[in-house]
Structures are given as structure tokens and as C-alpha cells.
Length: 95
Length: 97
Image 1 (cartoon, chains in turn purple, green):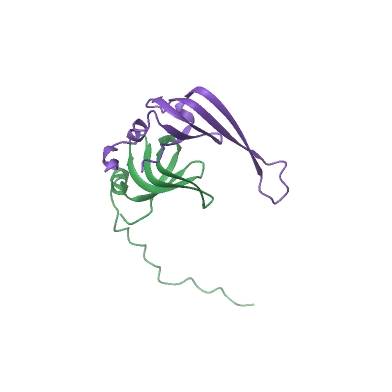
Image 2 (cartoon, rainbow over the protein chains, first blue to last red; image 1 turned 120 degrees about the horizontal axis):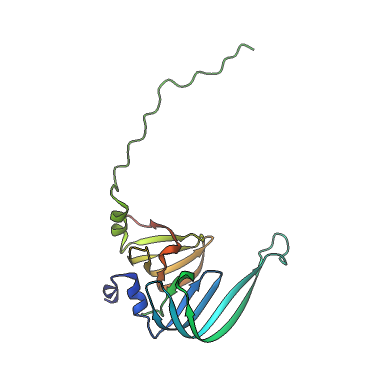
């Protein structure tokens, strides 16, 4: 039973070290990359990172229509993520 | 016009009885919902529905079988999810305790 090895939320992160994780950040940003290290603030060290930024354009949308969402992506070899920007971290599914 | 407004009803309804179930501290509630289905709402308004694996004193949360709901629409699914506690607005039990 794998969930018996989780006593506290950080165990979920510990079990994801060296794995590719999904990170949701403030400011409509998300990351996927290999997790190398973390601390109690959820500061993260990640490598081989792709950042996806959702840019909602309210002005050019027609009246009554949903705003258009533009997506920008960029890649980074190595990244330090400051913990206070983190909303959610999801490890690869461990099925 | 000599109409007078109707008098207020004589018998006042008694105050509702205090809730009988679920007394206890917030900590008791949180201990009770571990392992149960919950709805976690973040301050941004996004909801996460899933099974609460565990949580800590910062209200960091580990969820299983997580669905992300934005405006009532499922926008993502995660097998497991760690939610950083500072983003949490509330944790709601989604099944009987």
C-alpha cells in the first residue's frame, strides 16, 4: 500500500525527487521538469524545465465573447523556483 | 382608509436548536476528514476535489485522485497533488464523516 508511506504532505515531494513533476505557479504559469531538490519553503531546483505562461487578452476579445488565451512557452536547463510562488506540485502518476 | 396593517404574529418561533453533531475543534475536524473525499478551495477560487491523504501545520495538503475545478468545469486531473498551504481558503468535507 503506497499511501501508507505518506505521513506528511512533503513525503509526496520526497518521493518525486529525480522524477518529472508538474508545478502550478502564481501568475498563470506552470512548469514541468525534473525535480532535483526542495526545502520546507517549497523552494525547488529543477532541470530540463518547460515553462508555460497563459496570457489572457481581455481587450481584443469581442464583447460577450470569452477572452482569448495566448500561450507562451520557454525552456530552461536549470531553474531555482522560489517557494512562495508555488501553488501545486504533482508528481508523475504512480499507478 | 382606516385599514391597519395586520399585527405581527403572536407566537415567535423558538430559536433553532444548536447543532447536535460535529462538535469539536478545527483540529478534530481535520483529523476526521483524513482519508475522506474533500473539496479544497484556494484563495484564487479554484477548487480541488479528491481524497485527503494528509496535511501538516502549514495546511500543506496531499490529495489523491485530484480533480481541478474552475467555474464548475474540470480543468485538470492529477493522481497525486501537493498543495502549498498558504493558497488554501477552506477544506470542505465532500462525504459524511
